[in-house]
Image (cartoon, chains in turn brown, red):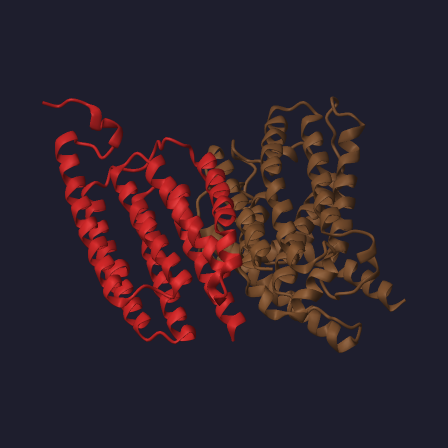
Length: 313
Length: 218
């Protein structure tokens, strides 16, 4: 019973925290670039405003266009619930493991690309084509990086991976883990449309990917998609934080442990947000044709991760 | 104690291998020089680690020499060459970047397969890192054969040398100091000879592209 209570609390927390995380990254970037920037809670205002607006749909759009935002939001929300962000052992661990999580996220990506193609606008099609290129190249990397983690933990179950690393702290410093972390970090940048791959700050660029797909959306549909994008960012941050640096995640369902878990989760999210903000300030966007090279770097890192966790056993 | 030793050595060897992979992904020579410098410093750290845990005093001398020769002297000379040939970037290697990276991954796997019997036979705590050193040797060799610019090839050769030194450190806790000194001198002399060659190639052909070497000039 307490398990489900924790699960619910965790889901509510993740849903509530996601827009704030995006806001924090934006605010940090603005400060780093000597701008004043919107306050970190700005995305909440934006979501409220968008939910109150009317929806305008192109006359060429089919039912798919209306369905996609719900699928995207639902799949990302379920994925967010699967991540052990507060406690190690949870009832939802029986529902899905790391592979389910990754493919739930991919389901959202596929529906978003279909929705980009559906209204027949030129930008949407371009965005979808690019998103599929990136997704196809990021997919094997994610699978391999997961395989490296699963090999050292002996299970693809998220809770068990976290528990194993908690029980054996030295494993977190093993090269397999570090390389898999680097590979997943690059993939995270690609999948959530961060800077070397896609520019999240603008929808006025010819080379945009995510923003090009959602260009036709408005009102509550756009709100759902924006919220889902924020959730996806949070899912990846929480995965990077809790799978590779699991300290602080509550092993028992005690109030004190959960409070500690909440604090450490916020701290980890803040640290990764700072890293991403600094990175986005320092690097320029890659040419689209160099993106496959970046992703093959991360693929090789993941391959090395698997090799070394295989050898290190 | 031994497990900490093994973990540290594997970590450092992976870092050395990753700095080797930088050659395949970046395009500017300054990035290559940085990668080589860091790789040499990591190699010095490996020597110091093996010296500390394996109780070989003389490996500290090797580490100091590594820092002095490969961490400071050679990068400085390389940087001077780079300033002189600033326009010579590695723009069109024989094998493109994405393919090179995949090939490098496969080479590392191949290195692991080749070293498997050695790792099985060895009792040393450093044995798990030996496949990574072999991977570095193979990847650097691949850099030498797949890149067109003489400067990139020189850096690839230096990394190959680093890989062999790493393998010696891991497999035999280093070689006798006098041999090590000879190897250092050899590497330095070899590098100086190569430097002169690079200057001559540039003076004769006005490029560092080795593809142009079969062109008749006189």
